[in-house]
Every structure is written in structure tokens, then in C-alpha cells.
Amino acid sequence: MRTPSNAPTATFGLEPAGYRKLLEQFMHAQRILVYSGAGMSADSGLPTYRGAGEHLWTGDVLERVSTLTGYARDPAFAIDWYVEQSHRLLAARPHEGHKALVELERYWDVTHVTQNVDVLLEEAGCADVVHLHGRFDRLKCLQCRWTGNATNADDLRRPCPNCGGKLRPAIVWMGEMPGEEDVNRAGNAAKSAGLVLVVGTPAEMYPGAAVVETAHRAGVPVCVINPEWCENLHYAQWQLFGGARTVLPVLVRDAIARRQAEGQPLPWFLRWLPSWAK
Ligand SMILES: [Zn+2]
Image 1 (tube, rainbow, N blue to C red):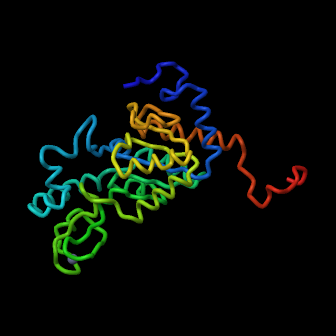
Image 2: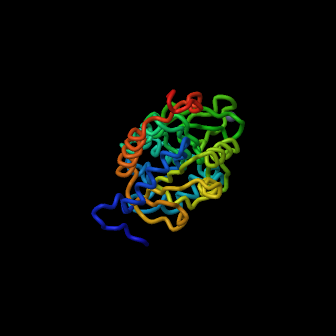
Image 3: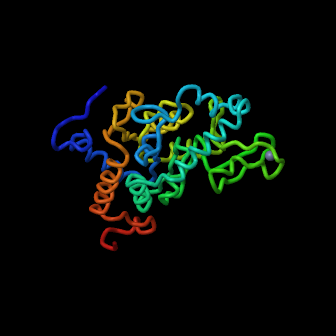
């Protein structure tokens, strides 16, 4: 594992010249794709799938709650587990990193693509969020095509309002694919972005990892924000070492300051005017 530089002038392990180049890239970008994973939510106290700290999946729980066969075999166990998780997710609050991303939206056209099933980005005020792995607060029926919102954690225990069948969370389980519309929205955001921020994930899991790779292949610069070096994202132009809660407020503040120092770009209909008329 590569260790962060200890140079006193470094910003989250990045030398000053590299950090300046990153802020420069913000200036060139009109659209930013923020691809977030478990590390983003971990800073709000939610357990991660793996890595340091508490694990969400232990023993055979993974198979019992995140596969169709496991859920069908013992729905009572899985439903109890999800209700307990829902209480934790409902109690979690957005942190300073989420709030920094809302601030970013005031200056850039931002699309969020997240692996997280919580809705902390929306709760903070983020406008355009694609949930590649679904949302814990959406339910769907195992028997019919009914889908709807959960208004509280226990809604999963109720029968389907349409057919009376058993409900399941609208989360993408193992062996399932994300919705086609979500994949397309993520792919379009990747290709049209001027900068990708990968936050709190090594982006190893497919098809999510393909979103970052699509952007990279389209020539979009990639910046990773994660406490550890992500070998899988070795092609990224920048890797900032730190948690989302620590890095994002500083990075967004500096990017906005850089933009304000340059002045706002002229609206398109004024750009053709000769300089003496501006
Ligand atoms: Zn139904």
C-alpha cells in the first residue's frame, strides 16, 4: 500500500503542484460526476460492507438477506434484519462531506452516482442522485409489479397493497442487475463530465466500477478521495488520502475560492462581444 506523503505542505498527501492542477480542473469542468460508496456513509456512522470498523454482513447473513433464494427461504429473518437496519439508516444524519457536495451544486452541474442504499445525499439537499444499488426506503412486491415508498421501517412487514403478497426492499441483491434507466443515466453522466470525484470506495464492484472506467476512457480526469490507496483506480490523476467528511469540505471550499478568484465566466451570449464592449 502506498502511504501518504508527510510533507508539511501536502494537502491530503498531494503535493502543492498536484493540488493546484486539481483545482484548475474544477475550473475547466462544467459538469462533475460524484461516484460515492460505503466510506461516504461510514462517516455518518453507518457500517460498511467490508474494511475497518463494523461489518454489515457477517456469517451467512449475506446469503440470507441479499439473495432471492435466501429471502424466500426465511422471509421473517430477512425482514427483521432489514427493519433493524432501516432504524439505523433513518437515525443517520448527513455529515460535513454531504453538505459540501450540496455547496458544490451551487457552482457546478453535479450528478451523483452512489452505491449506497441510504438517502443521506438527498437528505442533505443533493438534487440529482442515481442509486445504482437501489434505496432502502423503496419497497417492491415479490409477487406482482407493485413498487412504492416505505414511510417507516416496519412497512416491510405489511402485505403488498396491490395483491397481498410479500414485500422486499428495492435493493439490488447479489446476482441482480441495477435498473437499465439508472445504468444509462450513470453512463451518460460519466461521458459528459469534466471531472469525476470517486468518494469512499475503491470502485471495484461491477457494474458500478464500469461507470468510473467509462469516464476515464472518455478522457475525463478522475480524483479519488479515500483513506487508503486504491490500486484498482491507479489510472486516476489524483488520489487524496482522507475520509469524505474531512476532505470534501476543504476541497470544495478551495475549488469555489479558485473559481471566485477567476471571476464567473461570461454568459454565452456575451462571449462574442469585442473585449472593449464587455
Ligand atoms: Zn403485489
